[in-house]
View 1 (cartoon, helix red, strand yellow):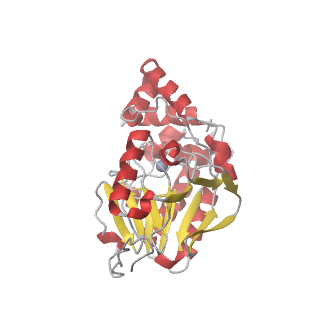
View 2 (view 1 turned 90 degrees about the vertical axis):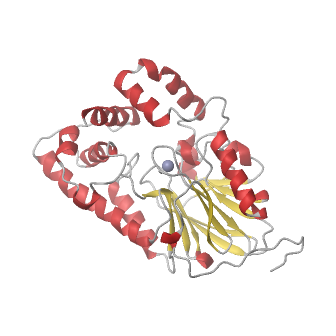
Length: 335
Ligand SMILES: [Zn+2]
């Protein structure tokens, strides 16, 4: 197909399976005019992004920026090499407020930046300058500081100016990229206050942001977990979706979303029994048999999720971010 300015848009063979998309760093075409940018191994801060091009290739929509400017620049370069449409990003969607999904916004500042109103409000709570300050202080912060240096030490937050969304919504928002519909659905609070999923109906693709961690433990920063389970159901109810791009991990299918739902249901049962028995979140996390979920990466997140469940059950546990980081640091040093 030729477009007015002579750019060819490749036709994508529809038979390619999502599970055939290699899990390697870089831009991968996953459907006609749709790319995922992947950062293995999907651990702390190593998030995915995505690009949806209009059918004529004249404009595009970017799903998320990355944790720092260097990584975001590499991602944008890779996407521009993959498709000329990436030179004309008209819209950026931030799926949520965690820095690994929005700290690179300054590099796409000419575009409309869209997020849920709750996400935009939450972004202001931990701007890059605050995280940069925290990382400078980390060497004097004992166990928690060592943990922060271990998980975020390879990123560079110095001097990043966070560009906030200039368009917010609540509930749902219909966008279009050229004549191509892109549907934003707010499913938070769950992972964070304002989680949004990005559905591309004509490609059978959904970008879940961190509603799906694939291959690693999820982490509950906001909750309640019942909302996260409901968010999984909303993803699973999307008609015609065959390809799921998680916030972290390899490109996958809706089956992975069903599996994550099972993780939370399993954890909720196990945490309740241990809360009733008077165990602390750390004791409970060490005691829980994860069964089919025992090989997930970032195992320290288990205690964060147990603490979130304890808090929801009315137990007297601190669930602010600093306390959760402290719990994870303790869990990691015990393992
Ligand atoms: Zn993330």
